[in-house]
Each structure stands twice: as structure tokens, then as C-alpha cells.
Length: 42
Image (tube, rainbow, N blue to C red; front, side):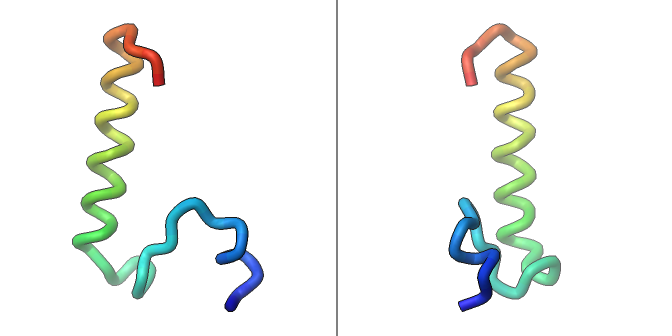
């Protein structure tokens, strides 16, 4: 196991070439950011 994986919250198999996983992460981040703009905690 690579040292940085030990502390990672999310590990995306195939890194930047896994577009499905990246799309899910991006969508989650966008939802969190838009929620903050509406006054929701998060």
C-alpha cells in the first residue's frame, strides 16, 4: 500500500482516468458547495 493511501478519505481506482468516479466526486462537491450558498450546514 502506498503511504498516502493510508490517510486518504477517498481512493479513486485508476486515478484521473476513471471518469465515472471523478464525475461522482465532482457532483458531490458541487452539491456541498451549493448547499452552503443556501445556508445549509455542511
